Image (cartoon, rainbow, N blue to C red; front, side):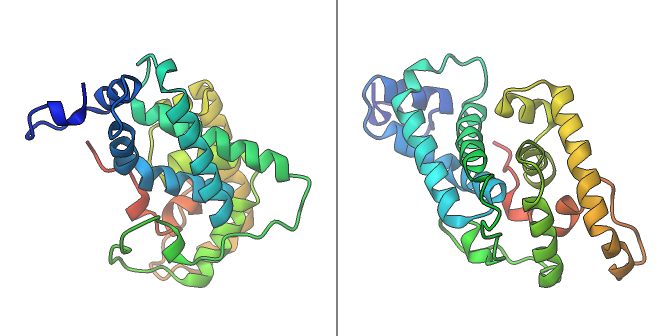
Length: 220
C-alpha cells in the first residue's frame, strides 16, 4: 500500500503513515516529517539552546525513527514516539557537553526558531527580557530544562511529557517544580519590571515571557 492508493480526500493518520513506510512506501515518512517537523524543531531548539546542535539532534532523531519505524507498536501516539526520540537525542547531546561551560546560549534570533515559514505576527516582549529568560532556561539542569520545555514552553500535558521523557508523571511534576523555583530565583527581579502591575506566575517566567505562541501544538 502507498499513499497514492487511498482516496484523495482522506488523509492517512500518523499511524497509517508509519505502517505505509514500514511496508515500503517511499513518500510516507516524508509526509510524517512534514506534519511534525516544526514542533520537533521547536522542542529541540528550546532544549539544547543552540541552532546547529538542535538541527543535528533533529536529523539524528529522524534518521533513528526512519530506520526503526518497524519497532513502533502503537502503544503511544506517533507524535509522542517522535518527540521521545528527539528529546532523547537532545539530552544525549546536552549530557555530552556538560563538561564544557562555555557553550553559547541562544542568541534570541527568532528566524532560527523554525525550519521553514515566516514568523506569525504577535506582540513582541522586551528583547532583553527574552534573552535573560532564555539564559535562565539554558542554565537549568538538563532533566529540568527538558520538562520545562515540554510542559511550560510547548504546552504539553504532564502525562504526555512523561511519555515523551520516559518517566513517571510525578517525576515530570517534580522536575518542573524544581526548574521553576530555580528560574524564579534567577528572574525574581523581573516582577518589579512588569508594566501591568501584576506578578509573574509561579509556573515560571519561561511560560509567560518567551514568545512561545507559534511553538505550541496545533490540535489535530
